[in-house]
Amino acid sequence: MGKKIVKPKELRGLFLPYHTMDPAQAIERILEAKNMLVNEEAELKRQYEIFRKIRKAQ
Image (cartoon, rainbow, N blue to C red):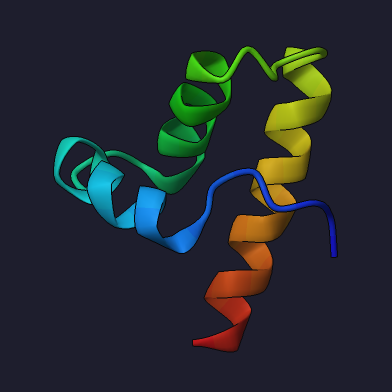
């Protein structure tokens, strides 16, 4: 898969502020905080594809 953006320990720390958000929105906020959003439309499409894979796996 792609590169890791957030390490597990850091992600645990982000749970409380982001757990009520839509997964795509939480990912977008994390990327914004890390100044990693380049092409917002492409990034949202990538996030949506990840979300679809997760939903299919459940």
